[in-house]
Image (cartoon, rainbow, N blue to C red):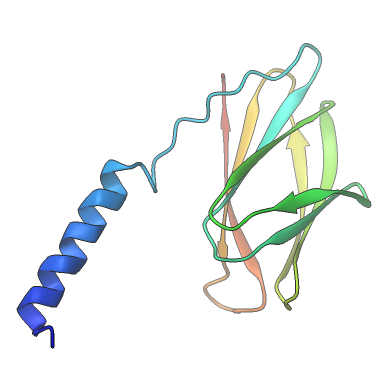
Length: 124
């Protein structure tokens, strides 16, 4: 059996490897096509998520994966629906020409049935 000290060392090593691999800090290397902006969905959950843009299916985001959508500038409605589960989120996203809007998706801290999104806008 693993004693507490061994477990702590193992956990610390795992965290160090995760940080070294860039689990929390990523460089989103994508340039939007001319006349468009991009939304990067970065899934920090173990969920597969169905993605809808402006009421239309856009695809499925795999667990712990990221995915980029190139969209025309302007306000877009983004809906996330957990595949085979209750989690859900809906956001209005203002897409800017030539910029990346990064949304880091996590399970909502106040309600396990929802998603929280950490939004940031970056120049490519």
